[in-house]
Length: 74
Image (cartoon, rainbow, N blue to C red; front, side, top):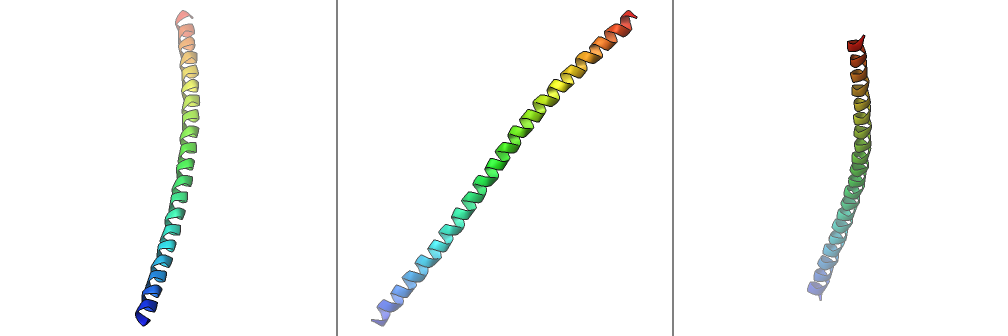
């Protein structure tokens, strides 16, 4: 009887530790998911900023080309 009680306590203890470990893994997975979403949003923001910067650089280049053309004809 004592051996059975000891085995039952050991099993209960192991199950409890397993549940705690599973909960810890669940929190880690959720944290990774949140970080992944934040990184994805940041990448999207960077893409928009890069496109805007490219557009501005292109407009500046065109303006410089026009200015230089006017200087040459003057």
